[in-house]
Length: 101
Ligand SMILES: [Zn+2]
Image (cartoon, rainbow, N blue to C red; front, side, top):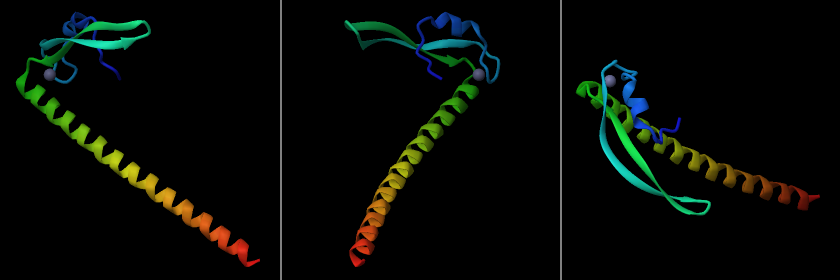
């Protein structure tokens, strides 16, 4: 789910989905994005939970998620490399068995 927020108030009005506390904007910044006809500036806001314990837990989970995803990507790359090596091996085998005939 993408959370590029253009109307942060909509999110602020909703209580935290984890603990039900109020949320607040922790920081705001502008981002320049490439568009069809040049660039556009979008307002971004990061919304956090006012419950410190909840937010700390969320940050921790996020960190773990990021770490997990990174590990998964490494594994996938390894698998891809292994598959590639394997298919090369298979191709070589096929070539060899063919030349025997
Ligand atoms: Zn919360």
